[in-house]
Image (cartoon, rainbow, N blue to C red; front, top):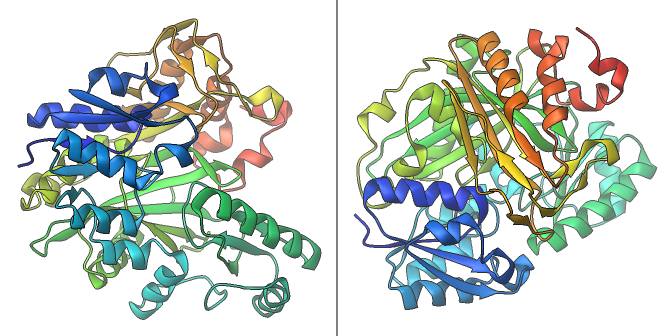
Length: 453
């Protein structure tokens, strides 16, 4: 087991990892930017090291500063969380060269599966269905137009690196394709330092389904079912649930088997997620793999009765995959609502600032993963997500009812949040019936749609 772990992240995921380490008896080191000095992950870690100015490019993305913090703190492992450097193969290689264990997959697996274009090719070789599209990076707008006409509009332009909905644009004709091509390239370059994009066919009204995989260094790798992430806005997930109301046992077995075989084909270890689009006929298409822990991992934990972050740490330390994880079966239904500091009535503009009052909901079947508190100031430099509210029930209906109750108890004043928006989603008749797809949020933006019962 590790003697000390550095968490190369911030916010709720850093706090989540610190808590897992505490329960395993492992001391922790937090890193933080100057604006995060009062963050809970800094206060609850055993040690903390400031690594730079607020912009992530000057702190959380600075590999040399994070490694320096690790060396002066004498850690023997680094957990990257999600975002920032979590899917950076070079960072994993630098950790290895400094004799520091990277708590995640091997660099080679990150390099293949973290590059969306290479991952699609790997999936094709493994016999996993992929959406029609470009064979590689699309270099020019002329090439983009030619590919789009070949596969047929509409198409999706996607960055080969990163995630979180950045570097993605839908196009329905040549004009929007050219505009989207340059916009996606520019956004990807700024967000990930890699402006490469590819093109794939846009599947009409799909569900966004992802499969959790986890494996050890001894050759054992399993999947822990699916999560439905179809409730999105501008390709950013808002609500996630497990299991999916779309997926039956036959489809679950088929997609799970593909996910495991694809992960094994690249020698994958630790936790990862295979992402798919699934149409109304049950046809599924591989999109990408996230070679890290996901934001929405708690719904899998609650349904399958495991601790994925602890399991990540144990596996990285050389342990076999825990038997209770390897043989876990779904035992409930869980829903997660991402709580963001943003104003739904003002085009979801970010709402940083000081929280005057904070009260989190509780009770049976309610879990809150958050790093905020009363009088905490939310900085404007990072993602707007400030909390994850997870509710569990014996059925999907009971989980929705519990989420509705919990949202009504969640009190955050001083800033705007999307809590009222999430409550309206939970009360929407189509959502309650499980009748939705990735276009759901755009369709219900109007108050009249929200009023449907």
